[in-house]
Length: 116
Image 1: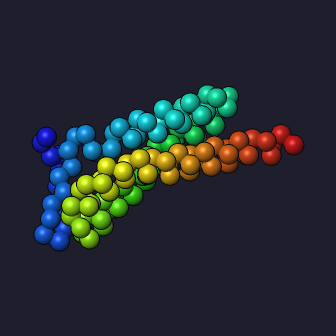
Image 2: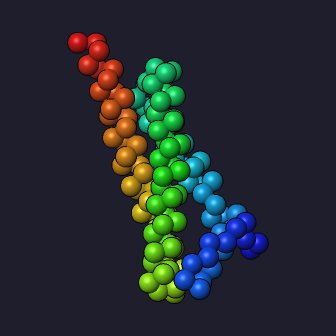
């Protein structure tokens, strides 16, 4: 796999390949945002707001994922490029999905408070 860019730190280098660039998590988070918005029958402007939250959370989760991998690799290169690398994507996606659910609650909460 050809690296797109390399993160260098503490005498080590982490190669970021096309598969790890974060587009998969962006697409997954946007699909989840669309599903939640459709299932909750949100109006178009609220639908767009949930999509924007999904995109922002996907970016934030990728930043968190990279930070965790870099810190873990600095402590132990084998661990950071092994199990931490493998599990970190799942963990950060789960955290992002929880925050997306909270964002959906906020969007729906605004709608219900205006109707009263």
